[in-house]
Image (cartoon, rainbow, N blue to C red):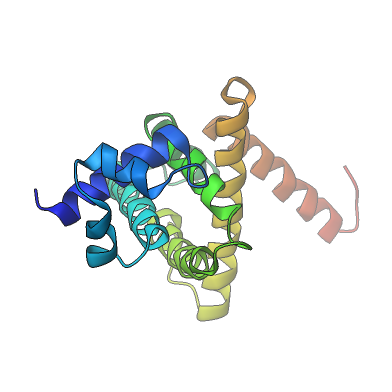
Length: 198
């Protein structure tokens, strides 16, 4: 690998081991076997390099998720059961990529102190919402505003479940529990819509 690729690999290693805020340029240089000048030459700033490392890690996770959900033919026709199976597959990937999520939350906490981080995550969040609709929505194509709303819902759900798995995996949501919650909420909404209560 060249210095650019070495720096990216070293930055990812540091993110997983130290987190975003505690990683220094010298940490990355030591992990990558490069030099300080290489960071400026290839990425401009340490923050830009760390952002690129997070993006690559998230893209690797997204590709695995895409592969896990690629065979839509084996997903159930029932919408709630389909939801359960899809989210079970999403959650199964959390444990394999758990360091990514810890690093991501750490990086987000720096957005008020490092402007590049805020800009990066605004764009990344929009991309994630669009991608989740493509991956997880099993119905007909949605009109623009509805697709945006569904993407925001999926992203909120994903972020919340991620946080649960980072903090307390033993008691975190599962595909089955999410499906049960969705079923209960939907039934309750139908009851309220018909003028009755549960």
